[in-house]
Image 1: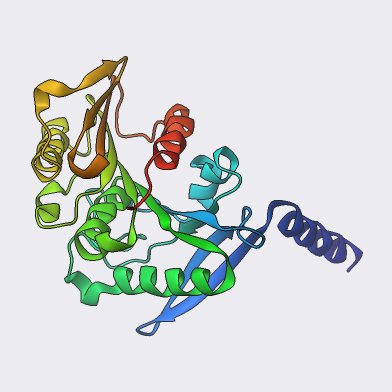
Image 2: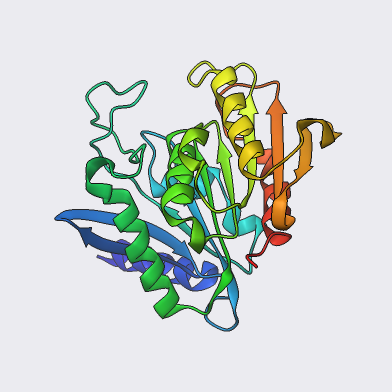
Length: 257
């Protein structure tokens, strides 16, 4: 009993120190979960960042590996959690957590989840509606494209890692995006990811010859002050954790007009 009380106290103190809490929702009969880092959201108008894990992941693993809350301490950062029901490249029966791949799929279950979480966060925190962002990896990166296509008006900028889906954004509002891809990706073909960048170039009216390259990163200026950042790494399907600080700087310089 004493050990249980000590563990409970440690958990409580962790939540106080890091401003972390778990949120649960019921969406069309399914229990949904998200982990929120409050940042400065209780005291001042703050940016909001949604983080979407890859297929088979969960919110707790994402918060450990994609620690955007540590790189952007003033932001409200919410790690969203998928549920089973989506067939993945390595999950033929859809038994692992995942995200809908297209608008209208699966009754828009994950778009509804996003809507409820956003509504709750805007009620509980001082969210700056001109600074709402989303980042996703793999299947979560594809869901970022679903959000852009279906809820693009809510966002200032996006980041998708190893998650193609550019075709669906052809009628979306122009928004800045960071696209990260590995040339040796064995799950999502590199050429497919490059084609997504081409769709973005068309949407943002970018001349492919006008990019400025610095190492692995090429930056293009688009219509209405938007930008496209293309990160091409000598790597595979993994999320580039070393790029997280640069991604945060990208978000910081992009606000919704």
